[in-house]
Length: 277
Ligand code: SF4
Image (cartoon, rainbow, N blue to C red; front, side):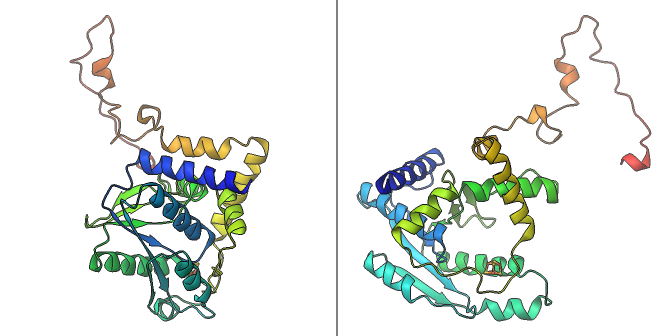
């Protein structure tokens, strides 16, 4: 059973890497290891895949100590050393910045993650890592999709591979096909020395929790719901949506085969009701 789970995670991670050409020979991959179950799993599975690939790419673990009260990385360092993984734990006090800028009672996450992202990109650039690996998994992706539709009015999620705006970094998410349930079980079996993620004292993201509950509830009735949602991200049909930038709805008339030739008839101009604009 133990091996079966490892095999499953290896299979899905390997498949995601191949499907999106995430890692190439000679890549220097900086693995962002937060100390949570997801990033430990990613680190371990990538290390096993690296062995299989006879070390054709490099792995380096990067941990950011944001000086949250109670932070203790002793177990993390020991684990990395036991597995002979090169690493750095960088100490940067983003916690004080976030505390001073965000009023009490509001969630810190948006500023905190922006600061963290900046530090990660800078570190990767200064140390010559061309790929940055993040531990988001299938369930993060589908929750983000639903949150974005419901609360931002956009169809978007977390891409498995992303070129940063300045074109200097490629971010990869090798666990894109892996289920959170499997990752949690694997983390338990492996006994990863987890660093708790509530040290920052930020409120739990209630919206994300509600979305999780909603998907979990639907999955109880139909277990295929999460995998169907992930599949939806790979199967977009612009002609069945309403985005005029992706599909030429106006130009459809030109393609219509109709016995009377209406091609040259002018389009009608309507006065738009201000309420509809
Ligand atoms: S949960 Fe805490 S550490 Fe994580 S992004 Fe939010 S503020 Fe930062």
